[in-house]
Length: 616
Image (cartoon, rainbow, N blue to C red):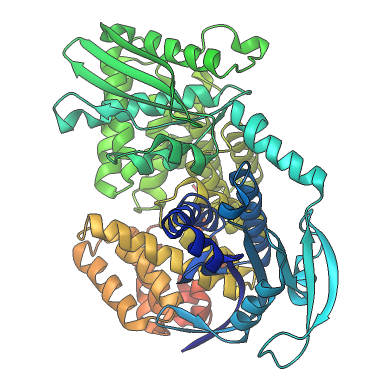
C-alpha cells in the first residue's frame, strides 16, 4: 500500500434521485454524455486520473492543485452552456469539492482522509459551484484568476476536525466572457483537420494521404487568424469511425475538415468536406480530379475555401497564394512524404530509411528545403538516440542550407538548436530553439526539443511547462509524460510525478496492445512502473525490451533508469556505461541531472563515465 499527497476532486449531480425518478432513461443518457463529452475530456486534458465512478458521482486524482481547480472551473463552465434552454426538471447541475491531502493507494483505488474530506466538501458546495478546502486555497495562492469566498470553519460529517471551506465565485462578467469565448470568439476561426482516408486500395499508399493531411494542417497553421489543432492530436482519430460533433466538442473548434485521397499513376482524386461542428451540417464540399502536378493548387483551393467559410481575416502578407510549392518535382515530393512517415516512427531502422528517402528527394530537387531539414532531423536522432557517429558539422551544414532556402522551417531551427548544443554552444542553441518555438508553438516535436534542452541546462520549470504541453499535443505519446515525470521529480514534486507515471503506463500499455514486439513502449513503460514501485512488472517489461533489441541505444538508457529506480545500482551503472560510451558531453549533462539516476551519483562506474566528453 502506497501513501502520497494528492489533489482530489469529488463531484456529483444535484438532486440526482429526483431527476431519475422523473425520467430515468433521459437522465442516465444525459449524464453519460456529460461524462464522456465534457468531464473525461477535461480531466484528461489536465492530466487527471478518474479512479472511481459511483452512480452520479466521480472521484479524480490530479498531479497539481492548479490543474484540479482549472479542470473544475472548466467543467462547471461547460455545464452552464449545456444547460442553456434546459427545463428545470431535466437540468443537470454538479457540485464539486476539491481537497489536498494524504491518500492511500492500493490496486489502483484510493482511500484516506484526503478523499473523505474532498467528498464532504463537495456536499457543501453550491449547485453548479465549486468548494475547496483551506489547504487548497493556501496552495493556489495567486496562480489563478479565481475569486474565493471564505465560508469559515465547517464541521463535516465523519471528519474529526472542522475544515476551513472556500467557495469559488464566478462573477457574471467572467461567466459571460467564458460563454462568449466558447460560442463565438475562439471557435469561430478554429478547425480540426482529420486524417484523410486512403482510397487507393493499397495500404502502401497510406503515406501519401497522411502527407496531404499534414501539409494542409501545416499550411493552415501559418494563418494568424485561424486556430488549427495539431497533427498529433487529430491523428488519434486515424482509421476510426468519427462523430464530427464529438470532435468539435473535444477540441473546441467551429469546424472539422475530413476527406479522402486516391492516387493512381499520374492522377489524383481528392475529396474534402468542411462540416459545422455545432450541428454536423456541411458548410462546403468538393471533389478534385486532377493531374498529380496540380496537387499544391488543390491544397491552396481547399485552404481558401476554409478561410472563406470560417471568415478568417487574412493579414496583408497572407492574401497571396496560401500554399507555397515546397518543390516542383513530384518524385521528390513523393519521396519526401515517404521519408516523413518513417521519421515519425523514430526507431533506428525507420530513421535510417527516412534519411535515405530524404536524400533521394534532394537528389531530384537540390532546392527542396523541407527534405534537407528532414535529413538534419534524422541525423540529430541517429546521433543522440542511437549513438551513431554523425558529425555536428554535418548537421549544422545541412540545416543551415535548409534555412538558407526557407527560413520559416521550425524543424530546421530545432535541428540547428540540437547541433549547436552538441557543439557546446548552448547560448546559440537557445536562440535557435526559441525561434523554432515562435514559428510553431503547437508542434509536439518542437516543444519536446525545447523542453529537453531546458532540462539539460537545469531549467526544470521551463522544461516542465513544455513537457506538459507536449503531453497534451500528442495524446498517444508515452515518451513525453516520462520526461514530464523526470522534470517534476527534479522540482521535488513527487506526488505529481507519481500521478504522471500512471499516464506513462497507460499510454505505453495501449501502444503494446497494438504491437507487442515494440521495445519502445516496454522500455519507457518500465520506467513508469519502477517510479510507481511496481517492481516485478517493471523488471518484466525492461527484460522484454532488452530481449527484443539488446543493442538499442534508448533501451540501454531506460534500463539504467529502471534499475536505478528499483535500487539495483550495479546493473543500472553497467547499462549507463554502455549507453554513454559512444556519446558526447550533452548526454552526460542530461544524465548528471536526471533524477532517475540520483541513486548512482556515488557509484564508481557512474563517476568515471560522467566526465565531459571532448567537443567536436
